[in-house]
Length: 142
Image (cartoon, rainbow, N blue to C red; front, side, top):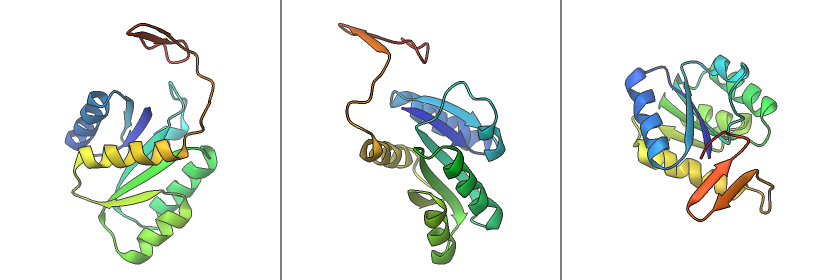
């Protein structure tokens, strides 16, 4: 799974990147959500977004991300959440809301669960498998 992590706190970003790699995923960590709209090395499967507040700006960013990547699974972590902003984030296109501080392993498991539920069976992949070796020609990963 290709995971885009938007986290401004360097320690939290490093930890989420480590957890994603440990779970066998390909992470891309950026400090702001605007960086996701730049040229990326891959199209992410999941986006983990971290916000301090679920304010109008962050809700707009979630909606914009949903418009740019319709099949993207979006999970939001926010330090201060109440029911109204959380509902607004879900309406904007997020699949799940988690309060900070969060357990990074739980957050990654939630992302995996949501991505698996949205996955289309029988999707064509360019991965070639030979015994224990798998090479993905699109991702340049072995």
